[in-house]
Length: 195
Image (cartoon, rainbow, N blue to C red; front, side):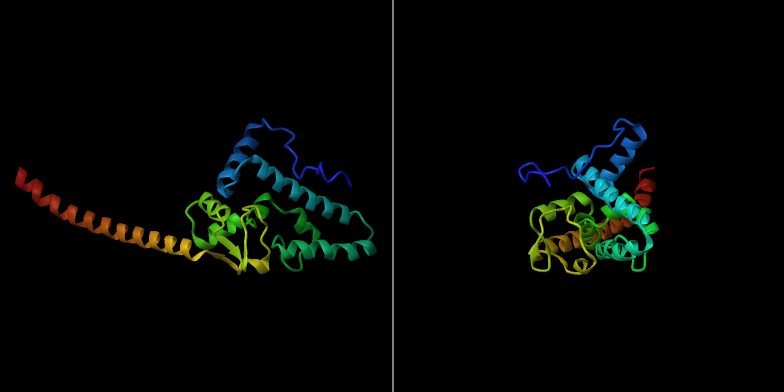
C-alpha cells in the first residue's frame, strides 16, 4: 500500500523524451487542450495506459471471470463518456489520448461557452467562475461525467462579460463593414478629383 506521506506517482515520463516528432506532437496537444505543462499530458497518458492495461488483462482471463469483471470497467468508462453503451474491450483498446483530454472540464467549458482559447476557459475555472450544479470546481483537469455535463454553468458576471464582448465585436464588425463599404465608394470620386 505504501506510506500516505509518500504517495505513488500518478504519471510516468515518456521513454524517449527527445524524439523530435513526439515532441512536436506533444506541443500541438498542449496548445490544443490548453494544458499548463507536459506533466498534465503525462498524467493523462498514464491514466489511459492504466485503462488499456485493465482491458488487456480482462481479455486474458477465462470467459466466466471476464463476464463478471468486464461490465464494471465498461460502466465506469461509459459514465465518464469515453465509450458508448454496448462497447467492447476492443473499443477500450482503441481509445486515444484526445478522447480522454476532451472529457476535461477545461475543454468542455471552452466548447460550451465559446471561449476563444482554452487558456481563457482555464482561467475562468481556476478563479472559481465555473460550477457544476451547486459545487464550484477550480480544477481544470477534473473529468466530467455525462450526467454532470448538462449542469455546468458560469457565474452570472462572467456570462454578462462574454455576452457584452460578443455584442461589441458584432457591432464593431458591422461598423467596420459599413466603413469599408463607404470608403470604397468615397475613394473613387476623390481620386478622380485629384487627377
